Length: 614
Image (cartoon, rainbow, N blue to C red; front, side):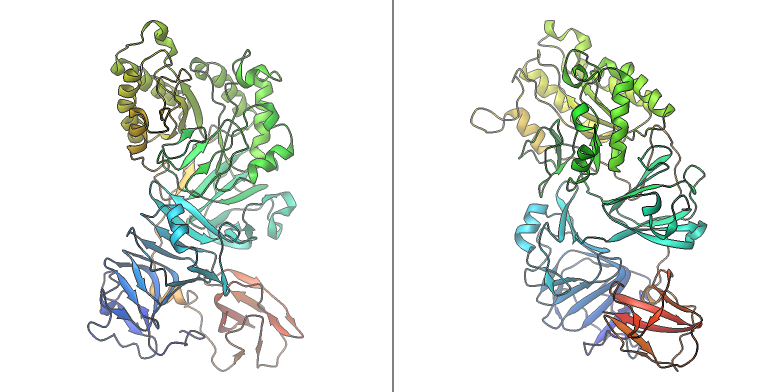
């Protein structure tokens, strides 16, 4: 079962035989050579483990795991969740392997963590990215090389206090598309970050995609036309793989535009402007010239025509690290101010022309943010024409300053009344568009005093967090300086302290999310895939392996050979997902250098042999 994985004398494979997922239950393990169960108390919390454990499927360790110098945990097509891992051993993350730790001190700095696959991650629920980098930047290795942030290591946000650490290599693929339903037919692996259009879609699958697999931690945008317009949809595999076995008629055999990017997990609370130290993990700054940092995602905005009129602008937006959305124009409805005063952008048709260009970014699309009343007029017309021209909008952005209440004459207005108007406004917007909402600017109005702003915010923040269709928000202190976050000594004001200390929740809480848009609201049903530990180590378990013919060398990193002399009429490599790759034999043997590390099956004239690529 473990050809090529025999460097340690004592090895145990996870079986889950006891019916639970307890890491420390010896009944859930078996010796890889004898199939015997480990002796009692050989796998205990707080005691050194000096042998190798192979994990697949879902395993949980409620207490600390300690790996001695000879201790090793190898995860293959599985997930280990627990408190913390201590000691000086090593953790190997193979194909589709994930390590999730809850403790605020989850990893010993002496551990060696080896990524053998790019389809893997370490999720630290209670360590922010900057802290994770500070303590653990020397722990991560791939192909005998120390990984370095940001060149070949990503450290993404995981909501309010966490982080996700994973390799950041070029030309990776986390999306596999198939020409037929049920993951059948021809297939192609789609590389990350690049935009794939028309004939550049691998495998000659332009307009010939009917099903796909998207690995968790990634977002895929599909569109009918090569500029991102037409029938289009965004799929986000936030915390679980998305497997679509049958695309609906909306996209089936119509895809000519694909972009896959890493997902970044943010909470709802952000800032309008590049403002630090407010316990948020996203911001925007009315431009496309900002950058994400370790602890915050930057959301670029095409403020006006000048940021969306040519492909250079699109390339700037596409290049932004961590960015998953692009914000549309800033108050284009205002012909006398903001973006609307330049280049006839206050004319709906003009704005729509430039907004369409933003589809080329392959990001999730946020609408232009209009002045308060224009969301019911100008933006409604913009959306209607966008639908006519098949231009996708995924999120509605709004501004709100309570201008309809005569704020100039009510500096001491009742905060409850202001809050009620705010809620009514947001609910009205949602009733019209039926899409998620970002409130990118809001306050109780610059004519109101500090007390009113503070009381209003105390009412508004819980509402924003509890309302599921509100994805993000950013309080914008009034330009009158009456409700700033910081005082003249750069210390928190009461409002700043309130905003900083308010704990924000997940922007998108679903573990798998199919984004609705103004063009389409259809959803997909997701099935829970059953996991069998033996199958995960060799998922092609229905094949009868031929032990009369030898594959050598095994394992190998470059070429393999077979000791059988007959005419070759079929030669395929099959991976652990059952995907088939037709290959040819060369003078040097069978080239496997292009494969990721892992276990594979060689089909030679319908004789099947297992080999390991190292």
